[in-house]
Length: 126
Image (cartoon, rainbow, N blue to C red; front, side, top):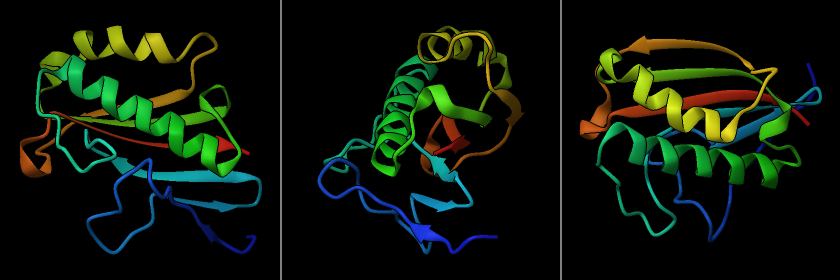
């Protein structure tokens, strides 16, 4: 495995709230940590699943661009929803960001920190 390069955006994304990097690049791949709906100024967006998904997917695009990649290079997406019953609504937003052939994906219903409804992590090519 190649040497890891911790990524991160200064001025566009909030700093991580724990002991992790927003992204790490290695061997022509970028691994993006789980993202919640937090704007660049630190404001938490706690709306419906569509609002949160929009913020998270925009942030994912920013992080990937900063790392030298992009949404079109995403290979795998991991989606965590507080309420798995909101998957159809989530998919409406997801399809605004990803087009066929879609990345591989897993979706799980889980308890998320801070009352958020959506968390997304991804792996992309550089």
